[in-house]
Structures are given as structure tokens and as C-alpha cells.
Image (cartoon, rainbow, N blue to C red; front, side, top):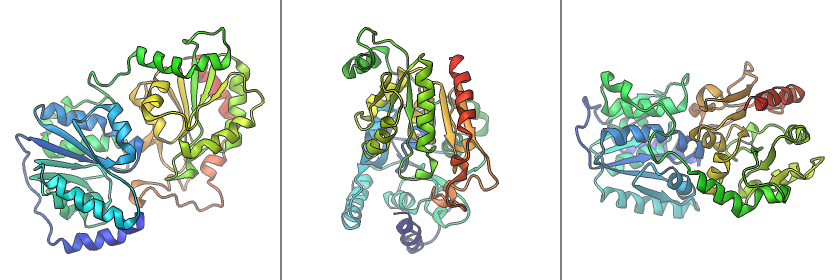
Length: 393
């Protein structure tokens, strides 16, 4: 899909004609507003403050969000928009037909504003152009021609957090510099941004997490969530499995917290292999492949801390203000690091890092036989630092 977007998308962009003139000023009112973000659960979560900022500016507008069907759950949990519009990933022929039907559906809504949160993809920019909104804005890296498809563009800043880039995108269209300080800076500002304790308790009782450890313990026994995975977008982001085995064994031996392993359905075998190699499984529970997105939010909300690679659950913990311990390799924590008040980030910052960025379609370009940015960590040092961090929770 990356190659199709780069080459076919570029041609379609040229065929659509001359560049749209960049408009001055901002829309005063809006009835329907569309946000577009297809890739990355974590990135979708990071759009939440920007969406909330738009809601504050246009409280009467109906907010729509266009994404892949696989991301519907995370948007339902976030509850930041009024309507979720999705398209399914399928074979190329079916996908193209569905895209044409989607554009027809979107044009019937008559959008006043479209915010394209995708970084540099042509696909989202082309949808924006064909929907024909009155105003539209997207990122421009000055290396491709997608800027011609918007009425406004904002340059993506590689040196700030992605959340702040999303905020800059919406600021660039509707708000003057003097108003900028009023924008929400937190991850989840409204009353929708909380999970009630009753929901967390209900979830824990449903899975009988504590009963899986020791029957005499109650449901409030403290636990730590561990995510040893990274999505297939870039498996190179994963800390070696052997490192997680060592870390889990050390934490388990300390005996202060119960440990819960998570992962998607595709990651069941990978997590299971780690679980099977543990010295003791008495206080460890493997829930990989058993949770939907809402349950994963609930699990992390009730935890003492999340330990994770650079991946989606990191941003779930951030939006819930939970302590985060994170490992970064090909990508930079400057752009995607945790935003939780309490955090511990491991990043080697090699001369070749980061090799994965939005500018190269989030593709790892490792110059070594293995990603030394993650395989080169000292696991003994990691264990010591994590133990010290956890003692202060």
C-alpha cells in the first residue's frame, strides 16, 4: 500500500489539475467537519487534543472521523467525535470500488472543513480533494505535490511531538496566534476523557485476573501491564524477547506486583513464547489475543504502570495519565514518546537514529544486520532502572 500510494497517488495528484490557491483567513462557522487518519492506533489517540480543540472552536458542528474499520473501536472508546466513517482493507480491486463509494457518501454530507491528519500520504489528500470541502488543511513536507490538494497547509515539524504537530494543523486553519494559548494541551481534556473505576473493576472481575494468581487475593491487588510487542508496521521496534523474559522474571521475583502480558490476536504466539520461558508463572497472566480495545483501555486504566515498546498501548497509558516505561529504537521519543507525568524512556540515540519517520512512510532503514538501537541495550541496567522507578510509584 505504501508503494501504491507513493507512485499511483503521485500520478493521480498530477492528473487532478492545478494547485488550489491557498486561502487567507479562517472559517467563521462550520456545520460538518471531517478528520482523516488511517494509519496507527497510537497516532489516532494523539489526534484527540486537536479534535477537542476543534470542538471547542465549533461547538455546534458535527464532527466526523474517517479511518480504517480496524480503528473503529479505539475511536468509540475515545468518544471524541459524533460520527465514525470507515473503509475496510481488502483486495486492491474491492478497496478501489469501496473508495469510490466512500467518496460519493462523503460528498453528500457537504463538509465545511476537512483536517487531514495523515502525514504525507496521497490517498487521504486525494479523498479530501474529491470530497470538495469549503476549507481543508494537511501537512506539507515540500517534497511532494500533495499540498495542491488543500486550501491550507502546515509544515510538519520533525523536532516536536506528534501530538503538537496535530495541534498545529488545526491551529493553522481556524485560530489566530493570539488565541493559541487557549488550546487544550492535555491528552484528553473533556469529561469523556476518563474511565470510571467501576468499569475497571467490572473488567477485572470478568477476567478474574487476581483469582488467576491467588484465590485469596481481592480484585484490587496491584498489577503491572507489560506489552512486549510492536505492530507489523515495524517489528524492529521490539526489545528482544529474551530481554523481556529476563525483566519479567526479575519483577516477578520481587513479588510486589502481579504482571499481565498483553498483545493482539496476531501476537499470541510471540507473547506465549515469552510466557513459556519464564522461571515462574504463578504471578503472571498472559492475556494476548483475549482483549478488545475497550478492555485494553480498562486493563491499563486499572494498572500501576505500563511497560511497553514504542507502540499503541504506550499512547493509551499516556491518555489515561498512567506511569509508562517505554523502549525506543528506530523511532524517536521526541516525536512519539509518552506524555504521562511519570515516565521512564530507554533510547540509545545512535548516530543512525531515528531511521524511521513520517518522511519515509514509517519504514525502518537499518544499516546493520539487526537493529542495534534495541538489541544493544544492557538488560541488567534496564532491570535496575525499572526496579528503581517502580519503587517510587
